[in-house]
Amino acid sequence: MERAFCILGLLIAASFAQSEVNLKNTGNGEDQIFLHGGVERSYKIYRPKNLPKDSPMLLLLHGQGSSNRWTYTTGFNALAEQYNFLMVYPQSHKKEARLDGSLAKQPGMPKHLVPMFEKIAKCEKDEVFTYSAMNFTCQANGVGVTHVVMWNHTHEDSLFDNQSDTAFLTSLAKTLQQKFSIDPEKIFVSGFSNGGFMSYSLICEEKTLFKAAAVVAGLIDKTVLQNCTKRPTPVIHFHGEEDSMVPIEGNKEQGSPSAQSIVEYFAKINDSVTIERIKVTPSTVQTIYSPKYKGAKAQFYRIEGHDHVWPGRLNEVKKGMDNSGINATELIWDFFSAL
Image (cartoon, rainbow, N blue to C red; front, side):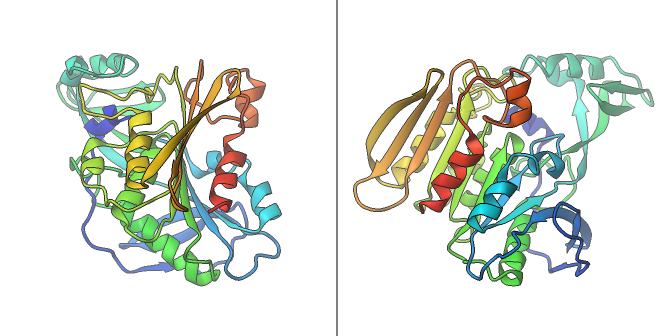
């Protein structure tokens, strides 16, 4: 989700807690347990039948309110089997959020969120109600408490627990890298929506582990961007012009940068000096930022008439929700595998 959900802000713990993998072999597609900071976290994997030593690894992060069951159906497993890389689908956990109904009038509040906050503003203490599949308890007049599944991608507030998702995902990746003898130079991260925000946070905050990022319909919080480690990092970004959840132009009132300006930020760090624009389908324009010499590239896919969906995901294509004519899953792996 876009930074408008910074009101559901997050506190990232400063230290890395000791972590361990539960050695139960639950197999591909089933939840596996990772104990982090005294909390059981879960993840799924897809491991090809003959995964060789020094293979790549890709972490794919789900969006807000979603789960790793969704990301498991994006089509990466078939590619992992074909090209021999480990797919990892981490799961965020439910976090308690206290929402003040007065935020309905906050400048820049996305239109689709205003009715929810208006409902909260009218609630009375101890009242219980449901809005958009979320259950609320009115803690005080005009203040609602709910639980949401999302990644802690910012440092701003303390509305959620103190679990650091940066620490969790970094520790998980390091543990699996050792467990499966993954090439440390080929550890990548990708995410959709809130998972895209988290992907940018990881490459900004974890200086050396994640070598590249792919973001679909996500942005970056301005505070994360301001404190981002300036190191060349390949990035590829997909965004629909009609994204109603995470607007492609960001949110000026809240200081959220546009999708293209984020890609250009990394392109500048990557010392990109050439820009090439290609109309790859009638509705999709690809912009390629290339460095003068061999180095980190950046790519941006701008999709006309496209809402908040993963390009090329079969379910959305069948429903007529995807007119992009591209397959983000395949393009992401093409981008990573060329590094």
